Image (cartoon, rainbow, N blue to C red; front, side, top):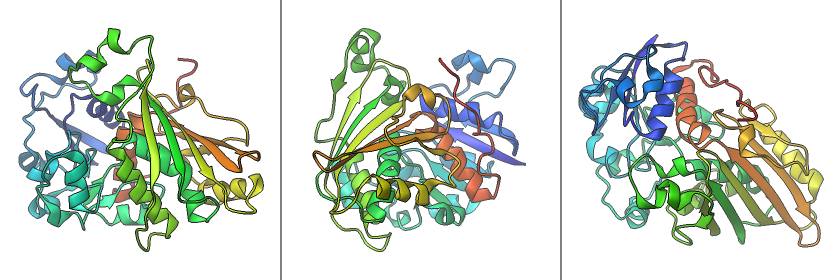
Length: 352
């Protein structure tokens, strides 16, 4: 039984993490921290935790909370974790960072796309990209896990087997993705107000979204079986849809010569048949976000368009669970040797 801490526990991803942790069979105590609500009872911020979790929110001091935890989750905006983490903290506890500070290996690329300085570039070579299904053995040996984002998890898992097996071309990939509004966070923003997002659909950060380089880097590793990073240049366009949660990504890729539906199906089966949280749908059946809502599952469906010689595949997940908190718990389970599904094996409520 372990003690865990969550800094940034009052954001959407942080509160989802708290929801999963209070039901985890291997956790005896949960500490929570917040920049804006320190000193308040957690249930005063999230009344759904009444009679379930009674702790008061601490300050968001990473070093102090690390002294009291076996595992510390950081659910913070980019640019904060890297300026507080150091090697001494990593000696004290396992760090799982839900932010972007340790996802990219090249600090110059990070600083360019996130328009901020990185405070601990020396730790980047210790960080493991926490996409559980792809880096399980590395995660098990790590003290610093960089939890992927929701768009990236969806896109990478949908495309990885096919690039790894050389079935699709690495150039000309298009990712058209749509997210619920919770992906924008809990902060008060004009673009997230009800009247701004309801009854409308919009693209945003067109050609400039920060997750683009993260997807490209990981798919480049898929292409080379993790041996080196070659150029993968793709088009990624995110959209905001008027629902609370969920991601649906539709990807388009040109097929290599002689590749058809059976080869695609065999590749997915080889890579994902034994993965509990990836559900491959029958060819021609495509996922819906309500099938994965509030669960840690990723649903993937695909077809081949013979007319254009393209793969069309759709991946769906819950941006707050497999796209954030659920994957963080899955990574903790792997790193500590718990059952990988502990605390995250819930089924999606349906038809809600």
